[in-house]
Length: 531
Ligand SMILES: *[C@@H]1O[C@H](CO)[C@@H](O)[C@H](O)[C@H]1NC(C)=O
Ligand SMILES: *[C@@H]1O[C@H](CO)[C@@H](O)[C@H](O)[C@H]1NC(C)=O
Ligand SMILES: *[C@@H]1O[C@H](CO)[C@@H](O)[C@H](O)[C@H]1NC(C)=O
Ligand SMILES: *[C@@H]1O[C@H](CO)[C@@H](O)[C@H](O)[C@H]1NC(C)=O
Ligand SMILES: *[C@@H]1O[C@H](CO)[C@@H](O)[C@H](O)[C@H]1NC(C)=O
Ligand SMILES: *[C@@H]1O[C@H](CO)[C@@H](O)[C@H](O)[C@H]1NC(C)=O
Ligand SMILES: *[C@@H]1O[C@H](CO)[C@@H](O)[C@H](O)[C@H]1NC(C)=O
Image (tube, rainbow, N blue to C red; front, side, top):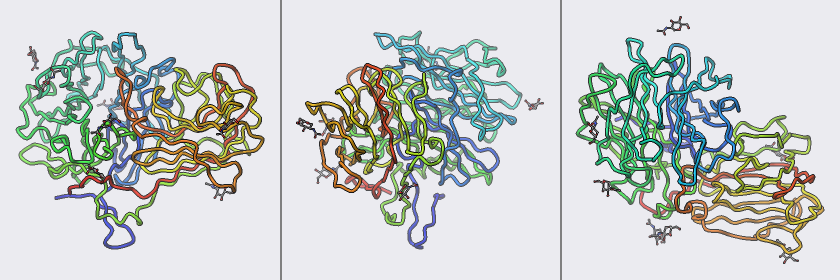
């Protein structure tokens, strides 16, 4: 039995660290190159997209850059929530890093899927310079890249039935890796282990060659509670497949009392010393209600060992959050605090859709945001910066200087933001009618605060740096968890700072003096954690 431990100062304080990427980090794909590990995750309509996290020890992960970071790679203009760029496959071959992914750049009234898959490359993953896209011919999503020993390159993806969103099994062809162009006819290589219907959704394929066998890992069972991972093996990258009698290899949904749910989208990696590990996405259900998972899908790590040529994930046990035996006080909280004195925005900040026009600068007074005409919720590029909420209990605080707004359209503030539909703000406006959770116009800087708790959020302000906070509103966390009918929920909650003219240009600047995110001790939810 193999478990990943982190040693703290106190000798009894051992912890299995999960989720390894807390906060919204969906669809992790992992590789190792020499003694460096990298994980890429999906980012939908956020910009830049596909963060690349780096670690030497699988425990301590740092953001190294973004693979999708140039408007020439793709542009998200009017991109609906949860469209944008989808799940990546990160791979390394002969000196080059590849990130294969899908962009869903058109949305129609019928919510039909039109997707284009492509890959980008770099020879230096720390440079943050990636190529323009090289497009595949496939119609589908979750593309995987696999190099066979004879040099053939396979593209494998979740097929859909001509944009009608009927999932059509796992498809594959060989491609010319320099152009992305198909060199063989596409073929359906696997229907999944479930009855093929609208909810079986075989997707997230990854092909491997391990110990003289080819393996196909997929995600199945839709993206909710029945999400799971299964594996097949066979004599070629295309099968025919022998089903693992122990499938699914990861499925917390068999036990709905687990606080970690929606487990799947597995990728596997071998360490330098021949040990195996894997990553998956999962959500942390709050208070036993699967509808409440406002942090969205997070990235988990688990040990893998092989028995009779099949992988056993996490020693056959469900994925759990940090072990309840962890001494929480000894766990370093991932406090994030900046006075914006570094000259540029920390790389963990990002934007919504491709920035059309720069609206921010770092000045000696802090983060200066010029308003644009777009407000949060507009399907455009609002003047706002975002950073993930990483813990269910977390306090987000800023001080903003936004003086003398003269109408209610001029507004600057902060937000707990999931997507265009799901968000709540506390801000300052020139309203004389005190609309919503907005503070009426001020002639001095104010502090704004959002206090997140597993089941609710509280919005507050303080009129002077040293005065006490006044609560102006509270809302149920479900507001950030339950999408309107027909829309997806693939993301997770972020904190944002914005300045808007709400439909009109506004000359009034907003300067944010600092940004502080303070996660509280990691509180396990009250359901029983099993180990
Ligand atoms: C690996 O890359 C080198 C340098 O670009 C190239 O010369 C060589 O042909 C490549 N080998 C394979 C197997 O692709
Ligand atoms: C997938 O299912 C279809 C429809 O039942 C069948 O025709 C096809 O042979 C199956 N393909 C594979 C690879 O199992
Ligand atoms: C899909 O198949 C599963 C397993 O047979 C079944 O439980 C489910 O109800 C089916 N869903 C639909 C939409 O037909
Ligand atoms: C959590 O605690 C509340 C209050 O004690 C209780 O009603 C609820 O059933 C518990 N939830 C779970 C999943 O145990
Ligand atoms: C920000 O400024 C305050 C007050 O000057 C200081 O106490 C704090 O350490 C600074 N924080 C950072 C992250 O620089
Ligand atoms: C703003 O002013 C209005 C009108 O005086 C008042 O009703 C409202 O409570 C004020 N809002 C806040 C957040 O102080
Ligand atoms: C779970 O949360 C949803 C959304 O808030 C709510 O509609 C539903 O009633 C809750 N379910 C239970 C069992 O509390």
